[in-house]
Image (cartoon, rainbow, N blue to C red):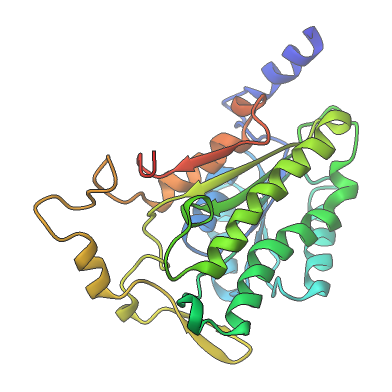
Length: 289
């Protein structure tokens, strides 16, 4: 017990940062919540590997971190390609001098559709990106987590209230994000006892990102050459917030920011949460209590 206390105390070195000496892979880290996670992790002393399909934006995030005194590396690529996942883990380990301490499985987007009109491609892509990809990253990184060197290891998988409660028009996304919870709990039970690996899920509610912006803005991603529009139709958002009180289903009466969302991920990944594992942390402003 005394050695464990000393270990935790050694991590709580604020001048060096909560994550000093740790190496973190963050997927989907070129914008939004992922980019904020990268920035906050680097501010706390972590060496950050920025994974994203958008190479230009990934390098912009890394340049900002490095110019501010942090340490980051961009490893852009398509997470739906197995060879990229192998490259990502390999380069992360090289950047970390043979070690990886943290994985934040954040990458993803929504491809909405009602049940009876949902195409197989919509279904398969969401389950692959939100379910299979995190599994493959974790499996590839297993040699760097199944170790007994006394250093902290933890995995944070990003889910959504759609996965916890379901959401009309998002069957594919809800299915995938619900699976993330089971993935997390299994990791905690398999790798916790022998290796001390923590695994937790952070489930977001309404956070201001391109996924919740007005669809009319025109944000999109491409899947095999097909453009997938991102966001929520403006009329739908107006209808949801009609009446004298906006965001009536959120006790804090507002959406969260990307920084607030990323701060929750940092808190879970940090030694301040060293005895939290296998849990789902809802970041919703009180929604769905």
